[in-house]
Every structure is written in structure tokens, then in C-alpha cells.
Image 1 (cartoon, rainbow, N blue to C red):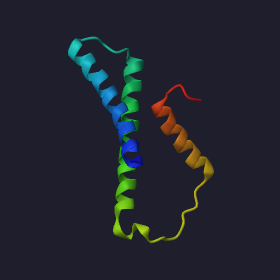
Image 2 (image 1 turned 180 degrees about the vertical axis):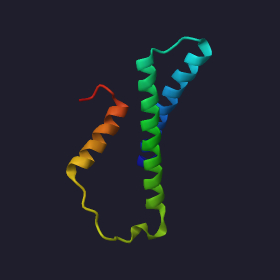
Image 3 (image 1 turned 180 degrees about the horizontal axis):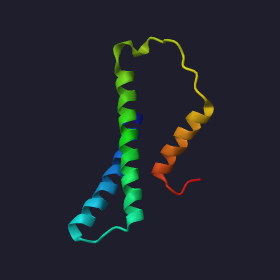
Amino acid sequence: ADAGHELRTPLTSLRTNIELLVRSEQTGRAIPPDDRRELLESVKAQMTELAALIGDLQELSRPDARQQGPLDIVGLHEVTETALARARLRGPHLT
């Protein structure tokens, strides 16, 4: 259930942003350049997030994934920055 939610959230945002861009093209109503750039950057970030999530799911679904190997040491700041970036995608006005 959690995996489905994690995939649906960026997918929903991605679909919404693409629909806005398509509707703009279909109606001839231009999106202001700064807003359009922001939408395209958001689409790119959401695709990156989806690719990472799919990679994580593939890794977890491997038969040997349950075998614990050496641990990776990561900086807390890296984890925090990644979490904040994902949160900002879902709520751009979060600080």
C-alpha cells in the first residue's frame, strides 16, 4: 500500500502538470514563460523521483535483497535535502 501511494503522488503531480501544458497548447492560451519553465522543471523533477522510486522497488523485489550486506554511511544533510526536495515538489510553498 505504501509503495502504491509513493508512486501515485508524483505521478498525479506529473499528470496534472502535463495536462496544464497540453491544455495551453490546445487552447492557444500561453502560459507565462516563468510559469512554463517552472512547470517543466517540476515535470523533470517528478520523472526523476519516479525513476528513483521504481529503482528502489526493483532493488527491494530482488530475491537476494533480504540478505543484508555492508551498510552505506550517508550524511544526514544529504537525506534531509532529498526529503525537503521531495516535499517541495508536493507542496511548493513549504519552507
